[in-house]
Image (cartoon, rainbow, N blue to C red; front, side, top):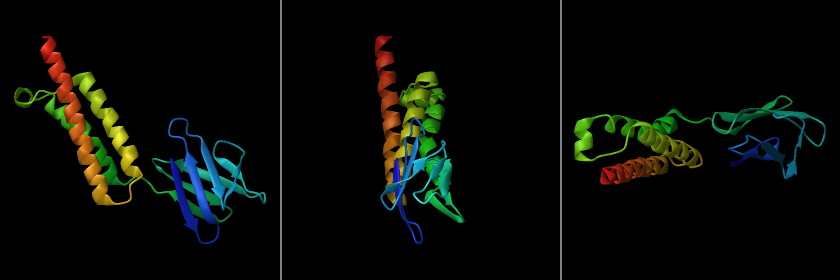
Length: 160
């Protein structure tokens, strides 16, 4: 994940973080900082730059007396929008009356499918700026989770 911000004293800051390994890279005005430890970097002029946080919780870069938010923290509504597919399948898969209307796979398989879609949704909407677009993407993710769990349930029922 890559995020670029413009700071009034430091200039253009590019923050990159690998979502799988957590490896961080930072460049200021096109010059990469030298990595000293996992979260500590060194600038060209020898100043120490410390990164706190990560892409999901929000990351801040501290150089000297300047602290810059390079990645904003995940908002509460982004968490709520992302957990909706998991909650829908959790509830629908455990209510017999609803499964008689439209069967969905629940339990471990339904939970796994909806959890993966929820996590992917959070990563996707974290990169989107407009709130209305985040809502639309989350509705699509909700429908996708429901559709996949429905198709798996049909496949299981056809084998019985």
